[in-house]
Amino acid sequence: MRESLSAKIFLTVIILTSLITFISRDNLQLEGIKYVAIGLSAASLLVFIFTNAMNIIETKDYTTKRISNLGINIVMFGILAYIFWFRLK
Image (cartoon, rainbow, N blue to C red; front, side, top):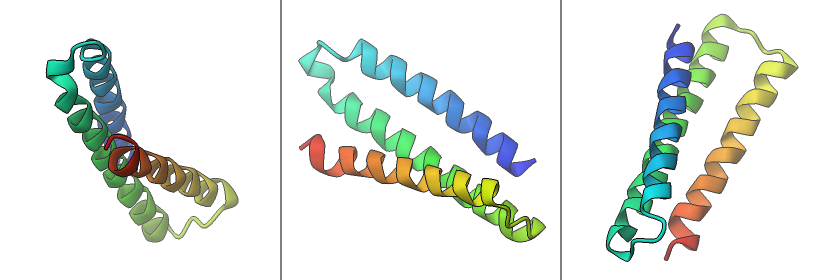
């Protein structure tokens, strides 16, 4: 239940931040909104990772599929963090 809710929130945030980034693409006055959009995406992905990990630990479902999905989410968070901290400077 928690994992499904956090996945829906993450998907909603990704759609919202994609729209914000698309709108502010050519407008230099809205440059700071790109930071907010990527930061929101990274924060919601981090919450999704924690709820996914908590669900794996609570259910003791240590299958390869569940662990690999968690690993992929961690890699995606690493990429977003890299973009947020180093590429947007």
